[in-house]
Image (cartoon, rainbow, N blue to C red; front, side, top):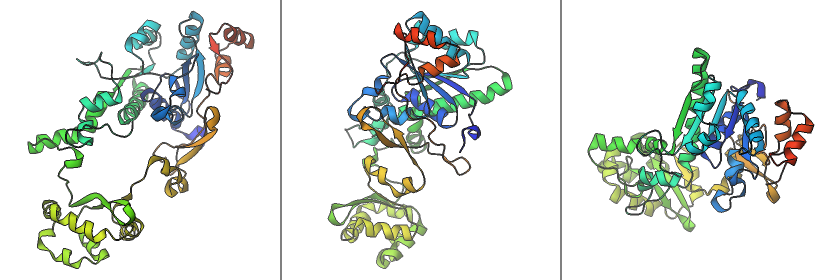
Length: 400
């Protein structure tokens, strides 16, 4: 897919972001064709140097962006930032409101000079009693019911990914795209706000409504009463595990026929899904016993041949070799900082007219595009050299 046919081609984005939530918004806009400039401090985005579970943050959420490294606390650095904003359609940020106000980069300050500007703020909470609290993904998972639903009784457990950060950035991008559409009609920009807590509440809405409908609190996922008779992980031959689902009466018949379970199919107490749910205490142990001698691969082959839902229990790194992801072009080769060299990253999980939006720019090195961005703003090579000499910009590509 060429850059010119991407839906956001020609849209300019300036992002003052770090960590995951804000960068995800810019990632989505960039993947869809926008020109995204990432404004970093001279030392670079802190996520470049995270270890452990944070080691993948920067390469995962910063492709299709240019990097300029500025000292925003120096008047000349701020002058550059303001010139960038002048040419921008969208500004995206995820710092404390007080930080952006102190710098003069808050919505009120910028929109007064640029009424067409769309300004996206990614915060912990939308305006209200909690809005000044400091939030993290884990904080809102705990207070927003998601950790309770994920772990067993008495052991709240955060989801195994930065779900609120990522989805919060996604909703920020969705708001920005909606604001572009509105600006086409009104000629004016607006302030878009996305927040971790409200995103988390959206994720648990089904459980909140379960209580409204039934009058009973939702049980954590490990101890819930499933809506389907067979919807669980099975341990089979060699200690392998596989997730199996039979979620309709038609599928029950297919399942029994496929495995030769005619006696179970004939049991009146297993005839309907709701009956199978009520009989899970006897049905599941029986099925576990019957399937235990089979390998996960053999069971998967039967399920796939008959169109029944199943899943191997994969670990994230194993997906790098997933035949579907590799065969469908779902992974892109990217440059990594430092000694890591290169790696593969999942692309945006959509297809536009059958094509995946792909890689246009590798995750940038710190300040990699500083000189070219300044040149586009009218700075001469001598001025760029002077700014670098005075440590107001970092103009040469760095490896970290």
